[in-house]
Each structure stands twice: as structure tokens, then as C-alpha cells.
Image (cartoon, rainbow, N blue to C red; front, side, top):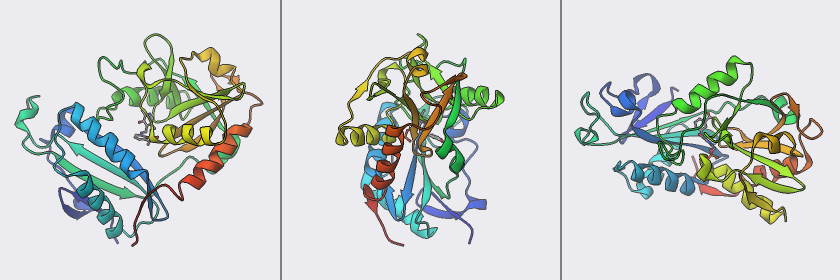
Length: 292
Ligand code: PXG
């Protein structure tokens, strides 16, 4: 059966799922999105993802033509139509069809797209042995210019950094802000552990407040691990006991080398492994349940 894609209330076969070339999502990256996972019939933290989507939309003055309740139903309907118990969900809301000018007032109605598909994770060996990453030259967007809290369709900042990483032979990259402070990676948040304390950069430096990031901090606190949002430089990363990345797609992935510097013992650390285990347990409990 061909995968079905939700567009504005209708389900279309993947090969026929199309939007207009006049859609400002395409012409200007004018829109917002979310990446969500579901695990064995449970949409992980769907409400939190919808809150973030609607907040992004509110900030760019984009009216989403569905209530959160209707959006939830649309997501579940699409998952059921595709008979998916485990999936990656891509929720996209664009400014809609307009003319060739920038003015968003020309776009009369937002376009709502829901894609549900099978997910491709990092290979299993990377979760066992850890990832090697580098810092790249492209600086993270300034919050005062394009706030990283807005999960907008304009991801060129991250794509530039991704290109720099992959050209150098690495899969992920640390992005610094304009002052040289560590913000996050191209599609993941970054954490380090120093003297047993879990540390992640504050979002105001220019990082997305990840849903996985929130979940990890909650799990750490529950396990009695102290948790701090702290301004850090590469020096703190190089000299951490453990480093890991978090994101919807990657979940938690250990980092064992940064810019050629070995992190800790050069293998996934004890607290990282403990949090990975706790996170996997959480994905079985926390979310919106549905049946096929
Ligand atoms: N930072 C950025 C810039 C992101 O885009 C995260 C952190 C992690 O947030 P969550 O809420 O997922 O814990 C993201 C996640 C991908 C991919 O293919 C990831 C994201 C967007 C698009 C693609 O890995 N966003």
C-alpha cells in the first residue's frame, strides 16, 4: 500500500501529495514545522509538540486553521490510515498560496501537511560506541534576527552547518553563537556532564528548547542528578566527563570525540547510558495513545 499524506483535510497517495509552487512555504520558507515520534501506538509528548508548533505559528502571525484538538485528530487519522504503530511524524504548516511578493497578507489560508513515515535512526553501532562531532564555522542564528525558538521552515542556517560537517566526514556539528558560546547541534541539543552535574546551554544563547531536552532534564532530576542551564565554551565540552546529544530523531546519542579531543574515557559514559535507558522507558509511557 502506498503511503498516504494528509494535506488540508484530505489523504493523498504519496506520489500525488503536492502543494502549489506559489505556496510561501516553498517560495520563502514561510511556515513552521514539528518532527514527532510515535512508539508502539503512543505519540511521544504530542501535546508539547503541538504547544511548540502553535507558539512558533503565533510568533510569525500564522493562523493555523485547526484547533489543537482537531490537529491531534488529524495526526491520529493519518497514522491509522497508514497502519503505523511506530513512525516519524512531520507536521508542516505553511503560510499557504500567495503571489510572488513577500506580503503574507496575500496568502489567504495556511496549508497543513502531515507526513507519517518510517524512521531512519543513526546506525546501532553509534549508540553503542558514540559519535564523533566537530565545531563548524557557520554561527547559529541570532535570536534577535531569527529566533531558534521558532521552528520555521527556513532551516538554511542548520543546513549550512550540516554541509560543513558532512564535507569534513562527520555526521553532526556543534554550532556556536556569534560570541563563541556553544548553542546546539544542527538538529539536536547538546548536554555535558561535569563533576556529576548535567549541563546544557540556556536557550537564550540561540538554541531550540527541545522536547527531548526537557524530558532528559526531568529524568535526570528524578534520578537525583543535578541539572543546570549554563553558558559554556568548547573548553568545557572538551573537558567534560560525558557528552551526549538529544533530539526527536536521534533520541539520546553519546558523543565520544569533539574536534579531535577525546571525551572522558572515549566511550559512552555511565550517566549517559543510565539516561538512555530511562528515556526508552519514558517513550513507552508518556504521550497520546491510539489504536489502529
Ligand atoms: N535543535 C534543533 C535546531 C532542532 O531542529 C532539536 C534541537 C531537538 O528538538 P526535539 O524537540 O526534537 O528534542 C531539533 C529537532 C532531523 C531533524 O532529521 C531534527 C529536527 C528538525 C528536522 C530534522 O534530525 N529538529
